[in-house]
Length: 549
Image (cartoon, rainbow, N blue to C red; front, side, top):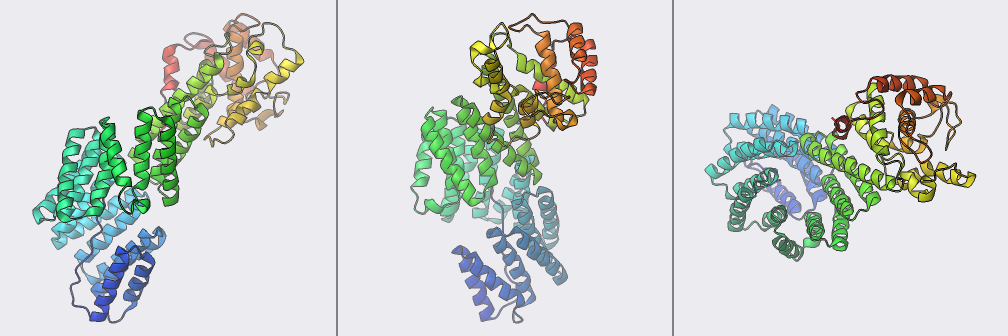
C-alpha cells in the first residue's frame, strides 16, 4: 500500500543559496543518497539565512530522510520537533504536513494506534487550513492503517474519500496510487473483479503520468490477483517480465516476486522450484529487514512442506512464521496478524494431530492415545488457570509428547509380555529422542518440557533427568497424570483397560509418582465426567478449536 509523503511549497521567497541547497537535497533523495540529504537538511535547520518556513520544512524533510535510512528513533525526535516548530509558527498547513509524516514514522514501526492518532490530528489541521490535497493524502494513510488492522470495509471507505478528493483536484498520479490501494482492499475481500478494474484504472493513470516506478509496483500487486484467481500462466508471465526489468536486481519488490514464483510453483506441484524461489524471497526479506515478508515466506514454506509431508521442516517454518507474526502483533498490527495467526495455529494443531497419528500407527493398542491425553491434560491445565494462549500451546505439546517413540521398534511397542532390559532402555530413551526431533525449533510455552519430562516422578525416581517435586516443570506434571490415566483405562498390549475406579485406586496407591494436588484435582473431575475415563468427540472439540486470544 502507498502512504503519502507530500512536500510543501514555501510561503516566502528564499535566497538563491538556500534554494540551491534545497534542490541539492532533493536530488540526493532522488539518487537514494539519504546521508547526503540529511547533512544538507541539518545545515538548513541551522541556517540563519533561511526563513522560518524553510527551517520547519527542513526538520520534516530531515525526519523523512532518517526514516528512509531506517533510523526511526531519530526520525521520531526530529518530526516531533517539526510539529512543535510548525505550531509555534502558527501554520495549520505546516502542522498538518509534519503530523502526517510523523504518523508514517509510527506506522513504519508498527505502532498503528499512534499512527492513526497523528493522521486524525493532521486531518483536522488540514481542514482548518482548507488544504484539500492534504486531506486526500491523509485519508489515504488512514486507509492503510485500517487495511493493516483488517478493517477492509473501513479501508475502502477511507480510500474512496481519498480518491474522490484527488479526482476533484485533478491529481491524476495520486488518484492512481489510491486506486492501487483500493484494488488491494478488494483483493483481501475476495472481490477479484472489482480489484482488477481498480488495477486497470490505476495502470492507465500511471501510464499517462509516465510514473514507471509505480507502474512496476502495480504489476507486482497484480501477480497476487492472478494467483488468487488461479490464473497461473498470467502470474508467471508477469513475474518473468518483472525480473527482466532493468535494475530489478535492487528493486524493493524483488522479494515479493520470488515469493509469488514460489507460490505458483507450489500450486503446480513443482516443489523443487517452489523451494528455490521461496528461499530467495526469504533471503531478500532478511537483507531488507522486511519482517512481514519474512513471516509470509515462512508461512508459504510451511505450506510447501505440508504438501510434501515434511512435518519437521513444516513445523520449523510454521513456528518461525508464528513468532514473526507475534512480533508484528506486539507492534499493534492487530487484526491482520490475528487473522494470520488463527490460520497458522489451526495448521499447527492439524500437524500435531497428524504427526501423533503417524506415531500411533506403529502401536495397534494406543490408537487415539495422544488425543485422549491431550484432552485430559487440557482439562487439568484449564482447572490450574492456564489462559487461552497457554492452553493452546500446552495442547500442542500434549499431542506431541510421544513423538520420540519413532525410534522404538514396532515389535517392542507391540510386545505383549515384559520388556527385556535392553528393550526397556530403548523405550526409556523416547523422551530424549522426542526432544532431539524438535531441538532446533523455538517452541513457545512448555512444549519442550512436556516432551522431555512427562515420565519424571514426584519422588525423583523418574526419567530421563530424575527431577523431584516442584523441580519438575508444571506442564510435565500435568501431562504425567493424564498419560498414566489413559494408559490404565485403555487396553494395552499386556492387559485390558481398567475401570475409572480401579485406575484411580492404582494411581493413588502409587506413592511418589504424581504431584498429589494435581492427581486429586484430576481424579475428582474424572469421577464425575459425563463418560468417566473417556472424553466424547464433542468434549474433544472444545480444546481442538480453542484458538488463543
